[in-house]
Image 1 (tube, rainbow, N blue to C red):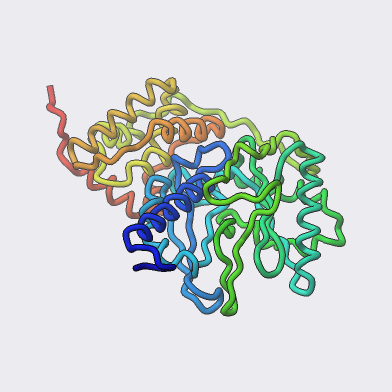
Image 2 (image 1 turned 45 degrees about the vertical axis):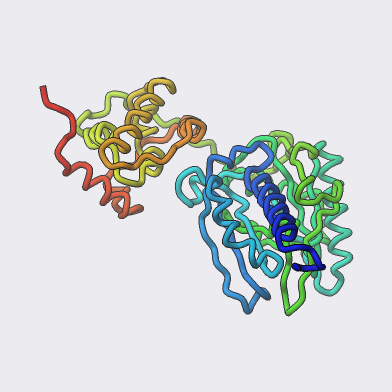
Length: 364
């Protein structure tokens, strides 16, 4: 007989059902209100035991591998502090590539945690009234509350900072000391609601209390109104409008011969980084191709990587299109080979190996 007198088979089925419920919830929280992070990576943090004394582990987890990450975490779930990145990343972790589908605040007041909860709830209601959006309020367990404001459309790091500070204007100045300003970091992790806060030998469950109480199997982003960033009034001083950059579409072919060869020959690894750093901007900005034509060339590159190097795992079309949108919005130029050598030596070595390899194409 198992726990509480249940048979082992029945207990195993109950445990498995709980595993699926928690995983389903974590997948929703990861994917975000617009589900775009389903095609991206987030950082996950875990700490088994009391914060401050336990070993904190931080790792990058693609959405499609979240189930593998949770499989190794589930056994210690009720003893673990679990955190997730506020930002998600389509390729590599940096300020330039960070994207945000939520704005997160942490209200702490050790001397009077209940007051911190009241202030957080009042702040959430003010956002809701002013912008017709529904923040999620969760009790942190010990010193206060967390607020997560879902976004109707994602933003980058610069937009996130403006939103974070702009929304804070709704909070009276005498209460702002309760807000943890350390949350304003591009790669900040936030505690995942409906998980445990383990500290000083004690633990508290991080309950969602507004706009309603949810459980793992009942949570839904669809039940909250996401904030439209365009509606937030932001006052900025000394804002300079950047000069328009003129792009030379007749760039020297010799300069980009290496890009053409990698696109033809494929890579043994680092395909997504190459697409993000160089290939997409080369095809869209330099060559001036349309999205469909560029998409086909990138697919041919992925097929070559599979055929030549056996690197065949799936790269989703939606990720490629999101990447194209990101490049086009910022009118970015390709990252040079010298810059890749400086920023990403591993990718540089992969590209160098591919360039030195004898062409798989038959010469006429």
